[in-house]
Length: 220
Figure (cartoon, one colour):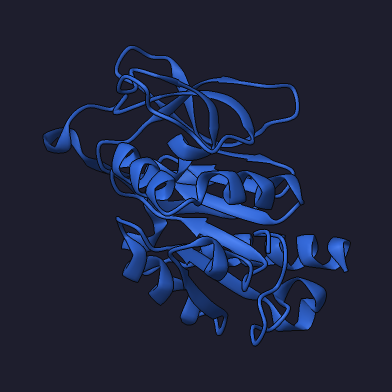
């Protein structure tokens, strides 16, 4: 049985857009916070800790946390290749902070041998905004979502380069005066440098849920 098959007894999540089920990669990081944000939107949520659980969902959130640890644990449980296939097959995936790093095709300032899932044609700089003590909050104007979104940045990456098919949804001006994207979208892939799961504002999660519904409709 390959990871693309449905094991006996598990429902087929990908076949029915009315049964949207969003997974949260539950290896390390802000798992509970993302689950809380999604369930507040009346979305069915499933923790994903192995390939068998991945095939029970039709969209996925990769939480903030430690990108190298998440990557190492994903490798250990055999999830890297299934996650890449999940993206290749057109499922909606959202990564916040560490999740943004894991969705990037290229990392700057990564640890030696650090592996990503990839899928987003962009280059991110790990811990670009500084260390834990440099964490901050700021109000963002996010395209298609709205303004005054209170974004929480904790040891956050920023985007150094985006490909032609990547849409920048929000940027932050640094102390040097340059603008760096902090939220991007490419097809059904979404990523942010900040942690919307740490606020009571669920607009980013609602935006992703609508993306997931569209992706599931296309696949049906």
